[in-house]
Image (cartoon, rainbow, N blue to C red; front, top):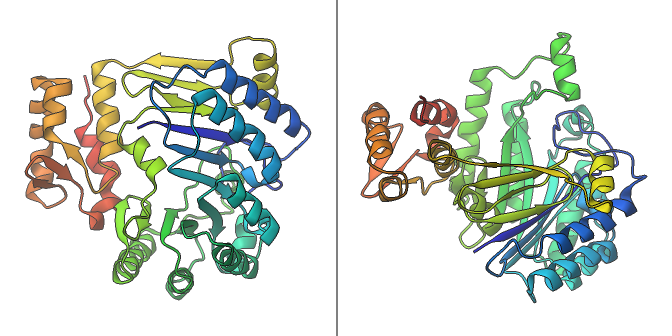
Length: 376
């Protein structure tokens, strides 16, 4: 299978934790739409099979009306000769979701929503500079369900400096009570180029302590498991048949094409490509037929490392046969020598052809993967 991603690089308001590429100025909103359509036309030969998933991410895709999203969607369908998508996701903000907007998305063919809730506690939403309230989140989720959306994901953030255990339990209880089939739960990161990072450098913000983060993670694991969710990727939890098909394609190394400023693409083999992370430069280059991307061809060592980093994020883990047949005996021997101590301590599980990190140890995944990467 293959996948298509559309990056919408606009937001109405700056979230203090976000380091994705976006602009809070909507002055080039219409120009961006036209440029994305033109890029799609320029790259229509890049996928050799029919794409199964379409994902609008950002930024905030819901700053565009359904009619505007339809312009891009129709161009995708025409250029890649596809009538409908197995999974069609749009990332949305709670305060954008009126009943009419949701009905129009459904009419467009959208069958999955990813709603940026982040917290059901207003104090924490204000801390992160989110522009919606907890009440708006709950109301829009219920409206989406009443309209007929069954496949819904919400994002929640834990590891906030002031987040208490009982507050985290409250967030998860509301999520579970709303009967949402998918959760993306992320630990707050203090990333460069964010407001939180500037505050951290000035000593105005202290990250959550490790003990608190571990406790919140343990609660997340237990409450979702008890509610019937499978922890299938480091940050993702789903009920049966509600795994994200699009994101799973990334983790399994399937080809995908990304359109829009800063969007990434991968041919499924050894070529990665990424667009300019600058709205004006992207639009101007597309309109004048100039180069608006960079790319790299991965060597065997880089492809092996990519495979380790993406595969071990998931419960499916590493295929030993894949390492041997695709990368060769040298990497096969290296993987086994590096992984043995983790297997002995239960941080990796070897089950036949598969090696994976037990979900209870996902918090240690960075340390484990770092030791398995090929280093000259």
